[in-house]
Length: 240
Image (cartoon, rainbow, N blue to C red; front, side, top):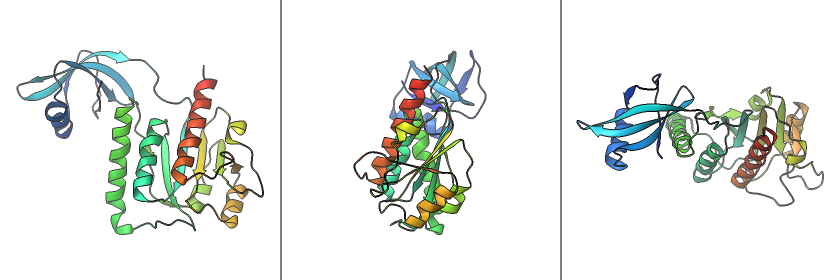
């Protein structure tokens, strides 16, 4: 079943048209006709019959989808800039794992640096990736991607639980799954070179808890997906 996001408010019994690019995709790429599709408007899902009429793709809204697609509590991922293809993988998979907000940031050991002249095109591409991933996994919400920030800006975020993945072997941290609570959560993942001692101290001074993601040193993209999987699993288990 395919899903489409629409901006307009919709109601059961209504027949709607998609935007021109979505209509082209549904009609000419997917070749949908007389098929049940899912439509999301204002974070609410609906089932409808999609069909082609007079060269337009229309959807007749049949019923509301009352199933819950989102995590019980908001999860924010702050990810240091990593190589483009790896970061785009994180954006896609983080969306599938239920993250609500993604904050890319710069740290002292980032191999990749922000390029101001490309930032708007980059953000546009990132938003397209998370929108497509949200549609694929049938979410009601498209994650928000913030502008690239500094560590100091990340430290100013106020949420009930703030964690930083710390792979320091000389000063072991508790496992993430052992300190989780069913509350709004921010998890910070560093670059491939890890955080400096000064950066870790800055986070901890600002009430971030250092946590371990296991005994192995994970690549940044793997660390993101591991941490989000643990958080999502914990929240969904606690909510039952």
